[in-house]
Image 1 (cartoon, one colour):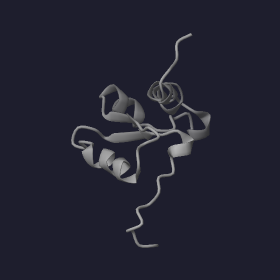
Image 2 (cartoon, one colour):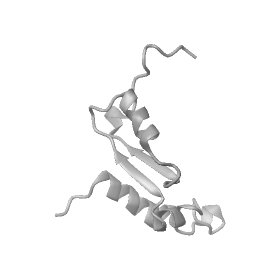
Image 3 (cartoon, one colour):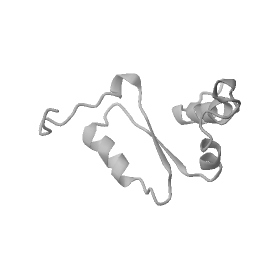
Length: 92
């Protein structure tokens, strides 16, 4: 059995659902821009690990070259998908 990475699972979902015509959207794809972005390699996937903290998450965003990429997909396990806000941030 071949295991798939989280990135591969999301790419499969994009290619087999997000880019396909859907009757809910008048037989248009849920995202009409997704297929071109994928074909043009304008999507960057980053798999976070359980040691990434809020600052590292922000750094991934800052490091992304948005002149080259249109979309940044940050992938995290549910347990680590709620990074803590730095205590230095004011309460909103």
